Image 1 (cartoon, rainbow, N blue to C red):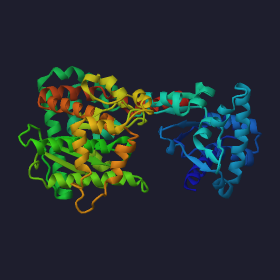
Image 2: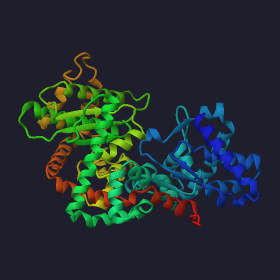
Image 3: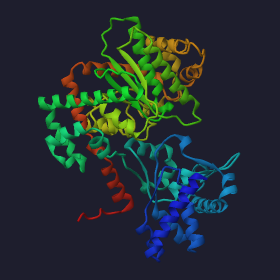
Image 4: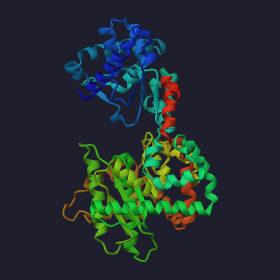
Length: 531
């Protein structure tokens, strides 16, 4: 009901504004562009058709041509649960006219497919807008692709996976409609506003042009060889960390060490984003210090933040484990001052604006092939944090821009993840990797849940019986990348060089570039002249 309400209001508003000065409906796609942002607004297809058929009284072919040329679809996820499938009975109860239109769209579409691919009933079943079986469902992603003129992903790897896997059959029918628009973030908020000291330092050496043309940040590359600039860059980062510590103490009463490595993972809590893998890394580091108190280790503070979906019980259990890990480490005098874990409550833009400029390390550790793009990765890069991550989402393109030698990449590729589905056995890692086994044994011994024995048993089942997102497959590689990271941090000057190169290479990831590509390639909109 909520999704239809938002679609109906938006489409009605577009129609109303068009009718103020136009009566020729053939001009509608020239005046109006509607971008369906994921499958949630896919009802825009049948809603616009309903208006054109029932209110404007156009014929089907003319209404369909207008609808397809007006609408475009951006896919933001490869997860099947996010490619919405709505029960037909919902339409029968609430939107019967919409259902009639969807059935007719499907009848005509499948007729075209049968003519192109005769006797291929398997393809027909996969392409149908209606999923048959017990409890028919409307495939909203199929509706969005069929009812629009453009379908794009939000990073190169994501768009390729859409074409070759998730929407493969639709891409074979409509190859010309599929394209890529890598996401971006606005530098005005995520650098200029939230990090004024670094912004001033940049402006002082390359001018103000970068604010409206982020590609000009590439001019910073020359300053990696300037010792004075590197010193000023490190000072800006240090000041941002101290300011965050002051704010954190004021808002929570807790004291942080600004000289520690600030290691961050901030994003929605989900198994594929693998906050649990990060927690396992910390648990291994904790075990190392317990077994060898004299071990040389730079003080580290690990920040987590993000929200879980209301009914996502396992994600909430992951949050609980991270907080239990934090409490246990805080209470252990053997590691106090060397390791600290912080789960930031009520994470929002205002908190991000404080944390991201202060961060040294950005964790982008999703299972390869599952992250559509990511945008926190861009914000961290823009503010001089170095990335430890998998080859997934836009992180791949970021590493290409900066050079993989300036990232800490690890883990399986998307192809390796896909190819291991038939034989991957998480128990192998438990049996053959001593640090993995020790970490899991401690985790499931109720060491972190003395007052709630067995509370983390579902995490054990997930990791050792299923591990669909391959946490254990990537843990050792993650720890090796972490060692490379801490070795580099021990050389502040070398760290600064790579951090500056990351900032200088982040120009592609401006939302200005992304929006200009949508405007030119999908909406056919030209910039307004500046007078």
